[in-house]
Image (spheres, helix red, strand yellow):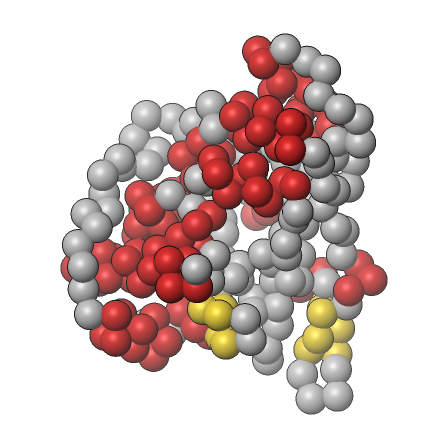
Length: 229
């Protein structure tokens, strides 16, 4: 079964210009985005919460995203999860396999450059608890791109769920061909190492990789964005 997976964000987002002072932008974001995104850590986690979640948690956005990407993306949102935040809710039977039911998807609203810069700056201030992401965990060591691609596509089966380029790979997880541009390298490393530490109950498996393999996969994902420029 081949399925796709898309950014499912709040439809109510930002239909008016930014008027708040910088210190108040998070409050403004909460009022406009809080229906779909958690800007504060939830009181408790559960599988039911994950099932009902409408958009990705943003309370640790500053540990996850690259600010330049946020500014760019908010002005022109592109689909990252082609079948929504939880893909089982957005697929239907096709002639040969499940296909995305586009009628169930919500498109993220575009904002102005001024708005994007203000919201991105505010989001980058949101951090997880101490030790949430280990700073410097990705060492940036160069490795064989051929071996890394083989590791991603065959040896560890990442391509069963993730696209490494448009149309190449699985589609039940977020695409990764913009992963290096979108995500901080330390976040990529730590998420692969222990997905449930960062996103409790998420269905991505903990692979039990060696540190060398974690470095290899992180470098490969970071390089995907570099190679497409």
